[in-house]
Image (tube, rainbow, N blue to C red; front, side, top):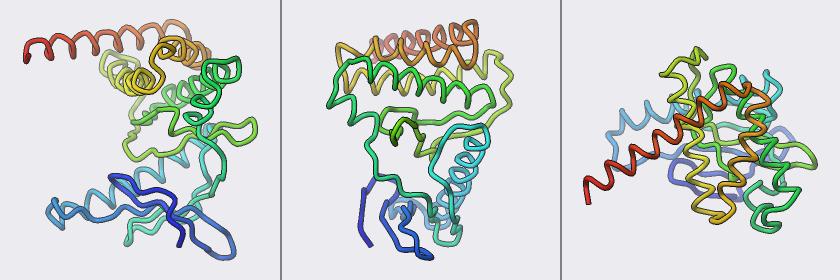
Amino acid sequence: MKVVAKGAEALLYLEDWLGLTVLVKERTPKSYRDPVFDRMIRIRRTINEARLMMDAADLGVKTPVVYDVDVVRTKIRMQYLNSPTLNSIIKNSGYSNLTKALMSKMGTLVGILHNEGILHGDPTPANVIVNNSDEYLIDFGLGEKLKPTWDSKYLRKAAVDLNVLLRSLESNYGEYSEQFFNDFIDGYSNAVGKDKAASVVKWVRRIRSLARYYTGRLL
């Protein structure tokens, strides 16, 4: 077993499975939670993530192929992509024609998901693998699937998804964060339409203004 990464929620490692080198995502127990509650959460999130990955793939949004879901051990065995993340490409290339195009393409992929009611939960460049000219979305563990009504409730949910992205861009890319976000929105608009995209962005700004307001009240 070769450990690839260890996160707050899961351990990622490589495994030889039926003659294939696969990536295993195993949700590990958390000692601070009640054991019964902890197991329920891990099982639910494992099933939910695998289902969302397959639903996304059905829409033409590339994700690692899911080979096996072990609910008892809360593991997902999936295709191993030995390729860089969009985050690492941006850190190496900065703000360039390449990274602008990749961010726009990411926006299109997230837009396709939102059109069908799939909210990724953590749509950041770190969760996009760039394999040759293809982008693969990964880590749907915080995602959910809703009916895409595009009413105020759904717009708010979509905006929360995009606010996670914007916060990540601001944290990691500083002065270029707004440009990258605009590139993302260009692609997003191509998928959902300009009117819907504009409405989601308005909700993003509203969420951020409310957060600043309440932070100011607490200080």
